[in-house]
Structure formats: C-alpha cells, structure tokens
Image (cartoon, rainbow, N blue to C red; front, side, top):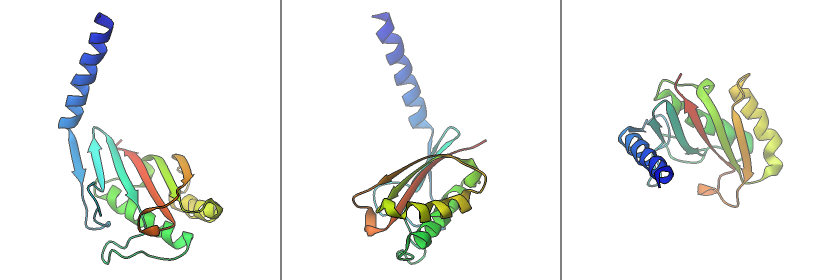
Length: 146
C-alpha cells in the first residue's frame, strides 16, 4: 500500500502546485483565440503555445493561398505570442506541424528552416484531415524560459 500512496501523494501535490501556477498569455499582436483556449499558457519555465494558423491578427482573415505564404504568417503569429513572454524562436524546444497535404512538406520545410535558422527544435509533422478555417498548415510549439 505504501508504494501506491507515495506516488499518488506526489501526483496530487505537484498537480495542485502546477494548477496554481498557470499564467495565460494574450497579445493583440497575434490572432485572438477563436475558441475556448488561450494563445499560450506558462507554467514554471515552460510556455505551451496553441496552434497558430495563417490568420492576420488585425483582420482575422486568412493570409495567402499557398503553403509558403501561410507558413510565413504562422511564424509571424508564433513569434508574436513568444514575444509577449520576452521569448524568440530560439527558445522553442518542440513543434508539432499539422499540414493539409504532406505533398507540400518540402516547401513548408524550406520556410521552417529559414525561420529557425541554425536552431533545430524537436518536431513532429502530420497530415491532418481538416484544419480550422480550412488552412494549409497549423503549428503549435513548446518553448522554455532560460
């Protein structure tokens, strides 16, 4: 019984601690959340950024019809959210890329490499059956405050 009690105690203690320490990130320089979520949340030294699509933060309209243009807008939005926490793309440790069509991977990857430069965070890329607003790409990321 002791073996079960101790891990459950720590799980309860740390989950309560983390819940008390969650900060919501919001900036007008990135598109407003279009659902019941935050642009990002911070807990400890980790920043969890919600997926960004190619929305212009002022007009809330989709920018571009090709993968390169949409990917560039996604990165503008990600950088704006990170900037709200005084971070840059160099603080990103993990990205998940959702694409409408993996045939566009090479073009997306070129823009992705330009944006990150020599920094290479971990990444997963998946083809998604449908992405909000029928865009071509959505990217979410996790950053760390150093």
